[in-house]
Amino acid sequence: MALNLVWLKRDLRLSDHQALFTAAQNGNPVLLLYCFEPSALRDNHSSLRHFKFISESLLDIKNRVPDGALYCAYGECIDVIEQIHQMVGISGLFSHQEIGLAYTFKRDKQVANWCKLKNVPWHEFPQGAVIRGLKNRVDWDKNWQKTMRDELIDVEIESTQFFTENQMFNRHLDLLSFVRVQNKEAFQLGGEGVGWQVLNSFFDSRGKSYAYSLSSPDKATEHCSRLSTYLAWGNLSLRQVYQEVLKNWNKPHWRKSLVAFTSRLHWHCHFIQKFESECDIEFRCVNRAYENMPRVTGEEAKIRLEAWKSGNTGIPMIDACMRSLIATGYLNFRMRAMLVSFLCHHLSLDWRAGVAHLARLFLDFEPGIHYSQFQMQAGVTGINTIRIYNPVKQGEDKDPEGLFVKKWVPELSEIPAPLVHSPWNLTEMEQMMFGIELGVDYPMPIVDLKESYTKAQELLWQWKNRDDVAREAKRVLSIHVR
Image (cartoon, helix red, strand yellow):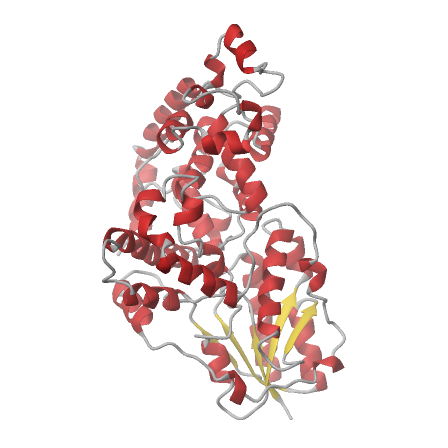
C-alpha cells in the first residue's frame, strides 16, 4: 500500500501541523520523515548545537508516535524519498513551505521536479503567516491576524494510521549520536514538550517583567520568553503562542509586557516575509547601492574579524556578549544588534564576514529573520534608522553593576563598575590594585571607539544621502513596507 509521506523540516511538532493533519485524512498510512542531509551538515550556517536540538526534538516526536512511524534518515532528501517510493510507493508528499537558505531552495526545486516526474502530488502549506512569492504588502496585516486567530489544526495521534515498517529502509541515523555529545554549554533542550514548558512558565510568572527586562543581557535570560528557538525549529507554531497571549491578555499588570511581546510575534513573520520576497539578500545588500561602500579588507580585516568572533576585542561588553553566545546559544535582541553594529560600524567590516558565524552560534537561527535583521543593523537597507551602538554606554546602561561582563570576562572580575566597561582608562596603579595587566591579561581595545564611531557616522550618512541609495530605497519600500 502506498503511503503519505510527511516531510518534517522546520516544523518539528505534532500539534497545529497542517501537513500532518491533511496527510492523515485520506486513509493512506502516514510516515513521518526527517532527513539529516549531508548538504545541511556541510553548510556554513550549521553547527552541532543545531543538530543536537533537532535530534532532541525528533526524540520527543518519536516517543509520542508508534514505533517505526518516524524515519530519521541520513542522506539527501531526493535520494531518501526515491528509495521509499521504490520500496513502498508514495501516494502524496506533505510538508510546510520552508523559508530557507539557497541550498534548501535548490533542494526543494529538485524535489518538486522529482514529484512531477513521478506523478506524486506535493502538498505544501504556509509557514506561519508568510505568503510565498509575495511582491507587495497589500492586506498582509489582515492575513496575519486571520492566520493567527484561525482554529488550531490538531490531529489525533491515537487514531491516525501510521506506516510503521521503516526498518525496511537502510539510511537510518541514530539520534542519540547527536544528543550524547558531552558539553558544558547551557543550551536549551529541544522538543515540543519542553517548548510548552517554557511557554507556560513565561505566562505563569517570567513574562510579567518582560517589557522591563528585554534590553538587559542578564535579566533577559530569565524574563524574555526564550521561545525563539522553539519557533525557529517548529516545536511550537507561532499561532499557538499568539493564542496563548490572547488567553492571558487581561492578566492584571501584564498589559505592557504582553503588548511588547505581541509586537515581536508580528515582527517574526514580517522579517521572514522580507526574506521570502527577496531571498537573494543572503548574498547581496538589501539596498544594492551599498555593495560598493568601502570596508576594511586584507590582513587587518582578518585580525579584526577573529578578535570579534572569539570575544577578544578588548571591549568588555562585546566580548562578554560573544562569549555568552558561544557558551549558551542565546543572547537578547539588543545585544545581538550591538554585536552586528560593532562588526560593521566600529570594525568597518562587510556584514557578510560575520553573518554565518552568528548563524552557527544562534541556537534559534532562523534564516529569514537572521538575514533581514543583520542587514538592518549593518545599515545597508537605506530605509531603516542608522544605529551605531556604543558598547561602553550599552554596558553602563544595561549592565550597570557589571555582573554580566564579570561573569563572561572573568579577567575583569575584580574591576568595579563602571570602570569594568572601559578598563583601558585604568592607571598603572589601578591595574596593580585590581590585579590585571592590560595587554597581557586582557587585550587593549582593537579600535578607538570615539574615532571609529565618528568615521562610521560620517560614512553611513554620506552613503544614505546618495542618489543611487535613495532610488533603491524606493524599490525596497514598495516591496516590504505595509
